[in-house]
Image 1 (cartoon, rainbow, N blue to C red):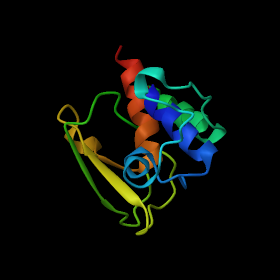
Image 2: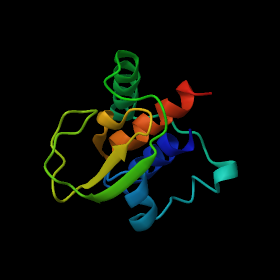
Image 3: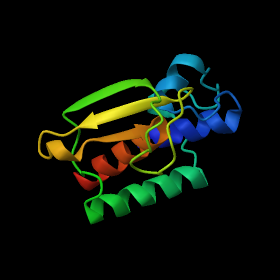
Length: 128
């Protein structure tokens, strides 16, 4: 759960430009008001994050996205392919995650960083 809240906190602070959690950790300063992970201030998810998570739940229910953890994840620059969650192209100036699944090898997908974080959170929630 902390990923969505951390992304929201970073965006709220103006210290991150929405590039996603992996990039945020590497290039953004975590605001003082967030604190350490064990004392993190819980911030509501942004509307965009809420919409992405709702879409991830819907796609998992419909079988358009797997609801299990990926067996392999690769990251790199955007290839121009459409994101499996939001449908927007992943531009070369954006990070791209490519996922492969042992249980469903034909169901690989590519995701924006924020879309990947939303899908991971919903996967974790579905598999509790």
